[in-house]
Image (cartoon, rainbow, N blue to C red; front, side, top):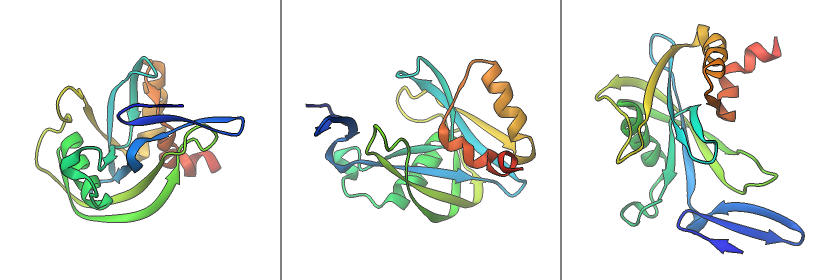
Length: 167
């Protein structure tokens, strides 16, 4: 129906949905340091009209110079660009779909191990990413506080709340 640089609007029968253009997909990184702090980011998200708390993430093969890029390489690069942390080892957890009723996009989840702070992070160009290092034991309160401050909370943050939600 319509195609932009990064997304396409599609129709299959009566079903309308959005997908990534050119086979692009995402890498998402769960990064927990040796002191059991999770590394998170927040950035302004145009579709939401506000800042959103998220796991670090980025697109795989979104530019010509990285076309065909291995997702683990993209995940390591995005972690360092966004957070300033270098992972000694990246573990592939698997492929997931964020909102399968309206978006065909998938992401590969990686767990970052042996983190070393090598920079400030913040992203590239005008991403304006803010890095947060939060104790896992306090994540539930942190999410509640961010909501009260008006932040959007990315659905992938549920993995950090999972055990508490299940009791």
